[in-house]
Structure formats: structure tokens, C-alpha cells
Length: 325
Image (cartoon, rainbow, N blue to C red; front, side, top):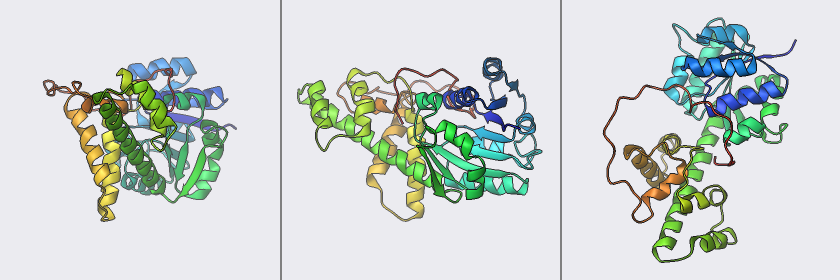
């Protein structure tokens, strides 16, 4: 009997992971999101059940992937009372893919064990195109026998397992993912400042990017973000608000380890400023808007009441550019 898979959180990552697993022949039996219209649309596309409760997903699946926004969303979907993935969860395996704190992964693992289920973190260092193509870089934490049990599912999402890495016990993969994004965000902020200064002194930015690529200034973010910074094309693959969140997770790890991380602090401050200025949903490359002369917004827009989200961005098929995370 094939493994039945459920997916909770049908933003651009979760929806494309569901599509990929369906393409690979897996039975994607149940889908859930806080937006019923998104659930219905993707369920119709994949031939899955459109679950109206979290408990329905657990009842219909053996393995449940979750891709939600933050610690609060994780706490809600694994609630101790009320509608929860933990209801009737005996024998289930949860694979939690969002970038959230190591502490919430540890807590969810404890709750899952108490419910007779197992939980893994499968932290992603990739973006929406890789989710659709099944070429996500996955860092996995949790009990190794559970990892072995669901390895075949994870392999289909990670270039036949070439991009799949078991890191260690619960929380360790989340720690590593926080560091990956901390360093990526620092690199992005540094690139924005370098290009802004080049622009300010009158250098040709296309030439500057070429020189950067051939010298010690080269980096992965130069490839993914450099041209976008130059052209002010900040179509969102990984938002500034998420960059701020992830840098904040890393800084909390640093505080607990009693380390001084001035570059991470400054980068966190810049991405947090973008959110305050109302441009937090630009791609992380939008940090260049704060450094190039004449670009930065003068003040934040008027406050508006926003609904709390528990999933990532609206479901969409992959865009043209890859590798933004």
C-alpha cells in the first residue's frame, strides 16, 4: 500500500511540493490551508480531499508535510486542545519544513511523541522553483529511524536524495538552517551596499557585477540578486520580512550562546526597517532600496489591520527565476 501524504500550508512552497509529490506517483490524499479557496483549487488540480480541519488531514494521511509561517502557526496546528494535527495521530509521521525556531521543533516533537506520532524537521534552503522541480536542499533533524522510514518521500523532493542531508537530533537542522539564512542575509546586505557605493561613485554596475563575479567579492547572492538590485526588480521569491524573521532566529541562538554577532544584528535591523517602511514583502534583494541613493521610502504607510496568516504566500506555480534562497 502506498504512503498517503497530506500537506498543511499551501503557499508557494507547500503547493509546489504537493504538486511534485503527485507527479512522482505519491497519493496526495488531503490538503489544508487557512484559506478555503486555495485548498479547493489545489485539491481539484491534484484530485485530493479539501480538508476543512487539521484532524481531517491526519485521518486521511500517513505522512503529513507542514509549511507554515512561524512559531505561532506551528503551535496552532499542533495544538494540545481543539482542532489539531495531533488528534488521532497515532502512527503518523509529521515532516515540518518551515523555517521556525529550534525550540518549537523540539516542542512539536514532544507533543507528537505523546500522541503516538513522530516528527521530523526538514528545513529547506531553496525556493519555489526548486520545490516544483523536486530539487530542494533539505536539512533533516529528528530520530534517524524516522528519517529512514520517510526517506523515499524526502528523496523525491531533493533531486533523488542528492540534496538531502541528515543533520542530527531534533532542533539541529533548524539551528543549521538559521545559520544558512543568517549568512545569506549578511551577504545580501553587503552586496547591496557594494553596488550602491559603486553607483554613487559613477561606476557601471554591469561591469562591477562582472568584476565581483571574478574576484573575492563573488557569492551566490551576486548570481541571484545582483542584477535585480541594479534593475530594481524585487519580485518576491524570499521576502524581506522572512529574512528579518530568520535573522532574528539566528540572533536568539547567538544570545543563548553568548556570542556577539554585529553583522547579523545590523542585517536584522535593515530587514526589520524594510518591514516598518511597508516594503517587507519585496524580495530580500529589496534591501538595496535602503542603500542606493534616492530609493528609500521616507516613511511607512498608514497602518491597516491585517489578518493573521498561518501559511506562507498564496499558492502559485513557479516563476521564472530560481535559487533565491
